[in-house]
Length: 283
Ligand SMILES: C[S@@+](CC[C@H](N)C(=O)[O-])C[C@H]1O[C@@H](n2cnc3c(N)ncnc32)[C@H](O)[C@@H]1O
View: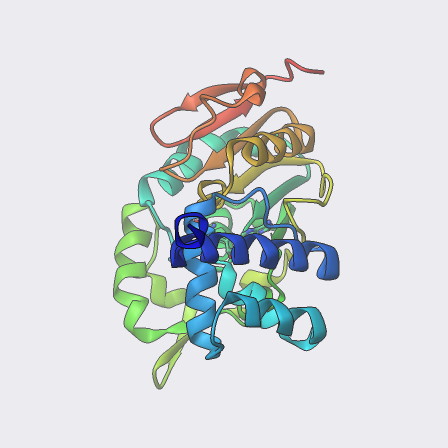
């Protein structure tokens, strides 16, 4: 009888992951309860392996007692996968159709949320420089992982990625060669420091923090896919409140605003490229 009602390993994992989520929220203020459960569970189980603890219960016990573990836990639960000029067609569209509108503003604020290791923000900086807009811009690159932000600030990437990044840059409509913007040293490429002059890196958690700035362009690509529908809607509301009327929102190519109640506040500029404009319908 006991065996019939007893939980299998899968159920135990689910229960333990719930307890871990509670511990992270109540003890450290990082609330993962609005993340899509299956991918969160996968990452928690990977974390257990990476830290060499016996099971999720032991991980929970450790994070409850050891504050120093938290940055490492956050870094491993976040998925800081990115590339320069990822989906080049999106950057080309920004360059050809969004930048000319931004050019009408004397001062341009851009919020890039979920910046991971910074590949996207350096890509933006390069295209804005080539469009002659960079000096008028303030770019806020935010993430909830301090470790990711520290890496982003360094602007150092493996040289093995340079070829893909260069191809992407040209496909995005880059006017020079990408090597004009970095120095190669041993196995690494270091982006030109000047690309950071108008960038502020800051910690911001999309789950619980408020509007970050008033912006004419918000990019948040490949972050909402990790969130439940309700959390996606909260975050879209945050972007709507951050954007000036007519401001642009750029999401990842597997993300959609179609089913979110906040979608009524946005009109597609190019639905396939996940580019939208704030219509200000709610204001
Ligand atoms: C897959 S990366 C996307 C990187 C980049 N935007 C791109 O598309 O190439 C997802 C990033 O979202 C960040 N992230 C996850 N949850 C977050 C949250 N609640 N608040 C802010 N950033 C978050 C992660 O730390 C990670 O760096």
